[in-house]
Amino acid sequence: MKMDWKEKIREVLLVGAGYMGMEYAKVLSALDVSYTAVTRGKEKAEIFEKETGHSVIAGGIENFLLNNKEEYNIAIVALPVDLQKNCVMQLIRNGVKKILLEKPGAFYVHEMHEMNQAAEENGAVIKIAYNRRFYNSVLEAERIIEEDGGISSVFFEFTELNCKRKEDVVKHFIGNSTHVVDLAFYLAGVPKTLYGISRMDEKNLVFTGIGITEKNIICSYIANYLAPGRWGVEVMTPRHRLIFRPMEKLHIQELNSFHIKEWESADQDDILFKPGIYKEVKTFLYDTENKRLLSGKEQEAYMSVYDKIIYGTERV
Image (cartoon, rainbow, N blue to C red):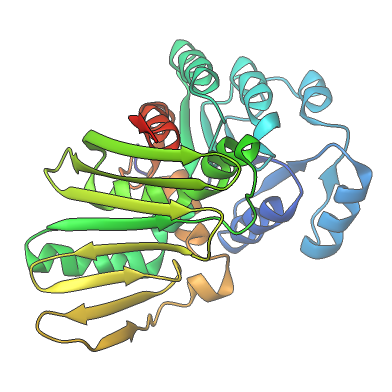
């Protein structure tokens, strides 16, 4: 469903008043969209009000919905992952039809499936908020990819700095590293075949693999959580290497040259707001079916691939 971006929207329900909640609030205000903010604790409510100048209702979403049934049809959920499923299920039961759910939506595929099933049964739509898809640098990369005739291969690294134990891998990967993997999949397609190797023990948290995506593009990856490294995606076309390292910036290497130059955007929205989030929220509100937004069902399918990356198709 696509709407004129200037068309007024019925009030948005913003659930969560932490860092991401405040970032969403800034965008909603800039878009002149009315919203009601709800959080659990009074302390976060006070900080939110101080930072945004907007009132917030404390006491949690469950208590709020008891007194405000079916008054909202659009919601943005900016809660920690372990609280997301319960919140989404309550929103759907109370008539919310469009939900932007802060990534990753769930740690486990069965949780994502339950939310998707509830959404389908109640005529609701869930979109997962991966803001990097909306970076100005990504938009420019897509322009170059199209001009060059497509992608020939893609490589990504998702090394985490703060994950040092095997027991923490799933939550760090799903909750954080998937920012990298999602961008690679968005640009090159989801692997239709994947050979993954995983080594997880006291001395190693290493993940590597190679595959072919649904767009028939060769993809490969590496991550070593116990060694130096950083996030990055590199996209190869017949004419360019497009490098996202750091992820917010685009560096470009041309064919037959070792020189790498940084692309600079004239668009200010990735400076005035958390990068990507302005276009992401605007797209969610006014062009919900846009393919740049990841659906809950797509995320559910992605999570089966994530399992192969984490655990490998082969353990060594």
